[in-house]
Length: 292
Image (tube, rainbow, N blue to C red; front, side, top):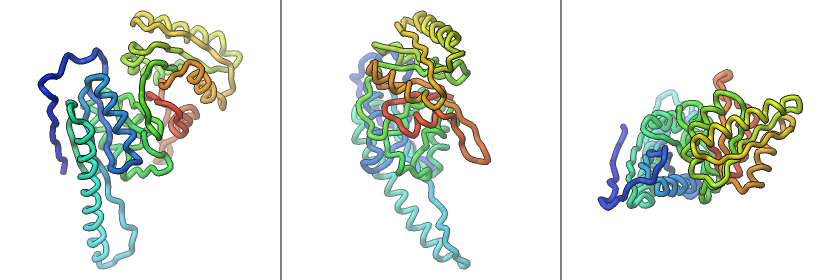
């Protein structure tokens, strides 16, 4: 059963800050480990004067116990459902406490988290994900950012495990002349327009350097038509060094956001990702905006 409750914004709300992100969605979990994600979503919603949809969602796992008469299974399910509901109630309490004064809404249901958040993305311009220890990830309780990227059709802002303040003042666009990168560039325009420093970076092989320069200068020219003063940069490095070059450039310009196309596909029922996408998701040192 899905529960939907709206938290009304105060009547004194002023005109919204101009932004392409008018609505955000975030999965809310109880406990400190995932609190950074909600803090980022709330802070961003306040900064953008945007609507925030909080989703409390978990899925029961099979007990995996051999029980020919079904008695243990029934007892186990009853206890697990009780714990699940307690988790959702705690998540709701945290969400309501942190969204005071925001135009926000709470939804809770039992489902696989990534699948549920992807569905609710129809109501949002941006998904806020990450902001939790990667090693503790449980796909029955937490939405995997990679799955959200591939399933939702929306840009996904992945927060570092520890969260932290998001400024978006410095941004590195990790360019690759592909559909996914073009989608990410378009999706990130609201952030790019508000940034103080934008670098369009392509990491390439030596024999591709001339093309990389052309690509990045073309992107910069396109961004300037949107009023964005960006810089182009092409760097030669082997494929295994691409993520390092992105990180080096981000550190050099003080960027706390990397914009990148997300590359992945299903293989024998599991997700397989490109090297850079995998590195950005598994070792996030700053915020990453991914689009697929």
